[in-house]
Length: 115
Image 1 (cartoon, rainbow, N blue to C red):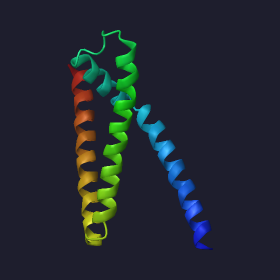
Image 2 (spheres, helix red, strand yellow):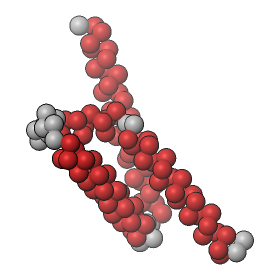
Image 3 (cartoon, helix red, strand yellow):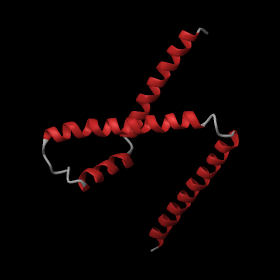
Image 4 (tube, rainbow, N blue to C red):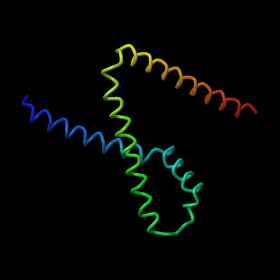
């Protein structure tokens, strides 16, 4: 495969990944509730000023994109400097943390049913 075809495929793959990640993030209930809480806490929920809303939404979008570009760039730089075992241990620790959260949620559900 020629380098130009490889870069065209990877460019299309990056665009598709970006779009799917955007829609996955924007439809995440935790994201929606978090932003609703932030906007309400800042007093922006009842402002009613359309220009403020028109500037706020692209500002949040741009800030989120910059944050994710920063994080993904940092990971791209650091992944070559870290040993392969680092990713294995991060995966293991993440799995244990997720398992712990799941067990706590199940215990809370059972406690709510019992009481």
